[in-house]
Image 1 (cartoon, rainbow, N blue to C red):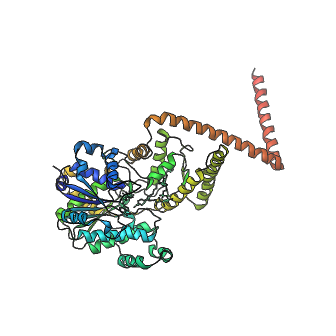
Image 2: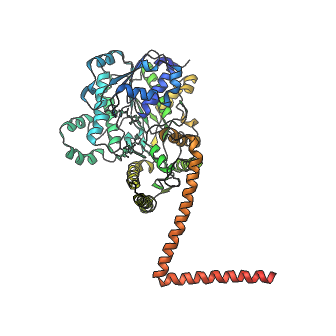
Image 3: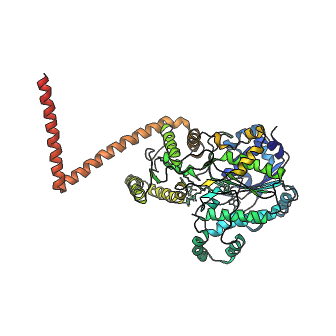
Length: 515
Ligand SMILES: CCCCCCCCCCCCCCCCCCCCCC(=O)SCCNC(=O)CCNC(=O)[C@H](O)C(C)(C)COP(=O)(O)OP(=O)(O)OC[C@H]1O[C@@H](n2cnc3c(N)ncnc32)[C@H](O)[C@@H]1OP(=O)(O)O
Ligand SMILES: NC(=O)C1=CN([C@@H]2O[C@H](COP(=O)(O)OP(=O)(O)OC[C@H]3O[C@@H](n4cnc5c(N)ncnc54)[C@H](OP(=O)(O)O)[C@@H]3O)[C@@H](O)[C@H]2O)C=CC1
C-alpha cells in the first residue's frame, strides 16, 4: 500500500496555477493515485471569454485526464473552482469561498506564477512575491493546514554556479520591494530594474528568488517545503509519455526546429541540458507534501528537482536527437527541412541569422506578396529570434545543484512509493525521452495526426529538391555576374573549361589506345 497515496485520501487540497502546465499534471496524478481524496480547490481566473466551469470542463476533457475519468468517474464533483485573480488584493475571492477555503484546506500547492522572462518588474513582483505573501497569510489562518508546498525554480539563484538547497539572501528585502512597487511609477521601475536584478538574466528568476525569501520569512510557523525544478519538459512516463501543452522551455524551440525555422542557435554544445520531466516534478512535489506533513521537519526543506548531477545530458545530445526524430517523424507543412547547428561565437550567430533565418524569411514573404497573400514569415522569424535571445543565457552555461534533500526524501519512501512516485532521474533514458518529447509536441501541442507522416515526408522531399534547384540557380547567377564583371573570374573560367576539355580528350585518347 502506498503511504503517499493513502495520505492524500480524504484530504482537502488547494492548488494555485492548476490550469497551468505543471498544475494539470499535479491534479491528474492526485486523482489517479488518491481517488478517495475529498476535494481539490483550484484558484482560477476567467480567461479568454471562458467561465471557470468551462475552463475546468476543457481540462477534464483533455487527453491528459482520460485515465483519471476511468478510475474516478465523479472527478468533476471533486474539483471546486474558486474565482480568484492573484493580481488582486485578497485575490478577489468571495467571502463565502474564503471561509470554506480557510476552514477546510489541509494541503496547499502553490504553483501559480508568471513564468515570462520579460515581464515588467511590477507584474512579476505582484504575482511571484506579493501573491505568495498573501497566500501564506491566508494559509496561516487555516486551522487544518498540514503542509504548504511552494513551487520555485532551480534558476532562482542562477547567478551562482554551485547552488545548495538553501535560501540565499537578495540585496534588497522583499518587503521593501513590495512596498516600493506601490508608489514607484513605471518609468522609475524600468530604470532600477537592471540594478535590482543584478547578475540575474531576467525579472522571472529575480522575483522567484524574492518569493523564496518571503516563504521563509512568512511561513516560519508552518510546515513548508520549496521545490526547485530546472527546465520542465514533457512527461516521461505518466499518465503517458510525451504530454506537453505549452510552448515554454524547449517545446517552442522543438517546434521551430521541426518546422525548419530554427537553423542555428548560439549554444554551448557540452553544457548540461538540465531538463526534468513534468511527471518527475509532480512525483517529487507529492512526496514532499507527504513528508512535510507527516515528518514535520524542523526547518523549511528545499528540494532540487534537477537531472544534471545524477544523469547528465548535454545540449548537443539533445539537439541531435531532436533533429533525428524530426527527420524520422517529420512535422507537417515544414517551412524548410529540419536542419540546425549550434554556433559558438557572436559573429557566426549573426552570420547564420542573416543567411539562414532572415534571408529565407524575406524571400518567402516576397513570394507570398507576389502571389497575393499576406507576408508573415519575417514576423514569425523576429519572434523566434527574440525568444532565442531570451533563452540563450540558459543554454550557454552549466550549473551544479546539490540534491541531498531530494536523495534523503527518496530514501524515506517505501519501495511501493518509490515505484508509484518515482523521481529517480537516474532511470531516465535521454534518447528515448527526447524522442517521446518531440512526438508529444507533434501530437499534443501541434495536434498533428500520425496518419499525416507520409505526406509530411513527401513535403520534405519536395523542399529538398527546391533547395537543390535554388542552390544551383543561385550559383549560376553569381557565376554569370562574376564572369561579366571580373577579368580574374573570366581567367578562372577559361582555365576550368580548358582543364576539363584536356581531361576529357586525355580520357578519349587513352580509351581509343586500349581499343
Ligand atoms: C546540433 C543540433 C542542434 C539542433 C538544435 C535543436 C534545438 C532544440 C533544442 C532546444 C533548446 C531549448 C532551450 C530551452 C531553454 C529553456 C530555459 C528555461 C529555463 C527556466 C525554467 C523556468 O524556471 S521558467 C519556465 C519557463 N518559462 C519560459 O520558458 C518562458 C519563456 N517565454 C517568454 O518569456 C516569452 O514567451 C518570450 C520569449 C519573452 C516571448 O514573448 P512574446 O511576447 O514575443 O511572445 P508570447 O509568449 O506572448 O507569445 C505570443 C504568441 O507567440 C506564440 N509563441 C510564443 N513562443 C513561440 C514559439 N517558440 N514557437 C511558436 N510560437 C510561439 C504564443 O503562443 C503566442 O501566440 P498567440 O499570440 O496566438 O497567443
Ligand atoms: N515550466 C517550467 O519550465 C518551470 C516552472 N517552474 C515553476 O512551476 C510553477 C508552474 O509553472 P508552469 O505550470 O510551467 O506555468 P504555467 O505558465 O503553465 O502556469 C501558470 C499558472 O499560474 C496561473 N496564474 C498566472 N497568473 C495568475 C493570476 N493573476 N491569477 C490566477 N492564476 C494565475 C495561470 O493561470 P491561467 O491559466 O489563468 O493563466 C496558470 O495556471 C511556477 O511556479 C514556475 O515558476 C519552475 C521551473 C521550471
